[in-house]
Picture (spheres, rainbow over the protein chains, first blue to last red):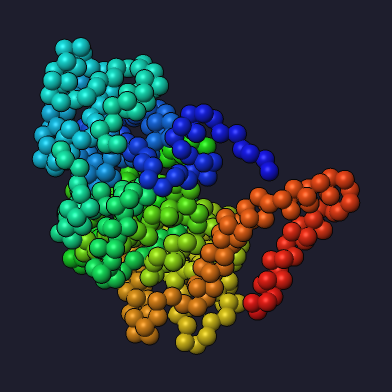
Length: 156
Length: 323
């Protein structure tokens, strides 16, 4: 019988060509969210596609999410990663609120928190001190984000 | 944060704790070792929810309709669970789950739980874990559970096996849909929904549906699927849809029927088809006889059909023995 060609990165993730995985294999789930009023989500969508193409399940919630909606969605979807896309400059407002809510819901420290967007260096440093795991600036190659997620997952 | 143990998860689900519910569903999806423990502990608590399958082609408006149905049930004071399934990419194993975009404002409702799921290789428009997720939500005390299928049309029949009531959502102008539904998905529908009914050609879709239903044979004692027109964007027709769903629930409950026979025929046929392709076919192809048949056909000593027949004949004989 003809054997389908499986690219090595797919083989590593234990995926057959039907998308079926061996029992007991976890799949990485990522919530991509855009807090606030900014109505531009091309960057978020590019990242979402790249993560999907890397074999992850991406939950996309659309624009104008409140921190409450984002964290509640992360709980219900049991994600491994929350990726916040913020271009509005309001990151110092939104991110601390998200962190507080993550603590309240008991998912802080268990779920990776990533922030993408235009973030000045000092702010990035402050965000990481607050508990953001990593900050990705504009033009970050998506491969870098994928690699970071794979290497830093909290749940096995 | 300590990882939750199976016992704690079960305890949490029973209390309606959202984090525990979410984790229980993940365990089932991932085929984790604790999954069967969790499911069997929850099993005695299931069977109370009314499970509604929502199927129909992409673009028919399933997510928007579900949003409105959730609101209608919430107005009645009922707690609602939603499981929305989207396809897994067969090439990468990844998935883009975007059904929540149309249900954003439900995220903070205490009485609502929404879970997006990828098919992960499941056939029939849902994932292998969807039934398990429904059980978890049922055990957690949700009164109504809505399951949204992938929307691949004709093939989305598996949802009927885990639902009490199946809605087939159609929209005017989606082309040959009426033709397609004659093929089998029609048998699993308990209610036909013509969504986007404010479009000028909606009545044509209703007429087409009626003519298809007219030629179908129903016993006098059978449930006859009604056609409900809705405009999911405005919520028009949604109250009537809820009433029809309730009528169907009562109809089945009064007669003590879990599934209609016509639905079971389709489900059994599909289950057989999957088993034949998934289990019987590999047995036939991964055999020395298969390689021998390849050689014979390659040398021109057998036709392709005769080769296939050669491989199938022991199976056919065995089946005749059974019959």
